[in-house]
Length: 154
Image (cartoon, one colour):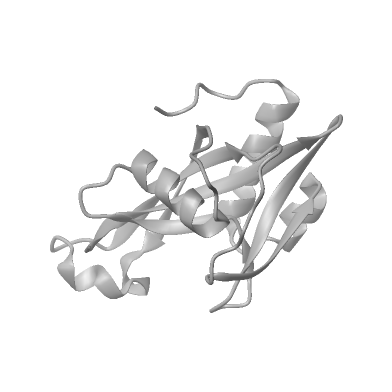
């Protein structure tokens, strides 16, 4: 299915007692640490793409609650092979961010990643390669500390 001109980011978190941990994944093709990331498929909404990517990349048996974040980013279209199939004049694609509560969930990484670490906020932020990942992580961390998660997407 053709790729849609947008990207999604899903920051996994879990509660371990009173602590919050965040999952960071090592990309197989670039050897960098990131959150779950991927492109939308033609006809998908960003929310639908986030649900699909989280299930695929984390090997989840069921759909988990996804919370929309305010964090957005722009990625140059030149980095995507499908650019030629997008409308003329597409120079950047938006990246929409979500959070996924994986408390008590078992993760089985896809072939896209070689490793996963559960870390506290500072360690996760220090390890993430991309600014948009750190921004989304920071927003999520503040929301969790303030008990201010938005309503999950349907």
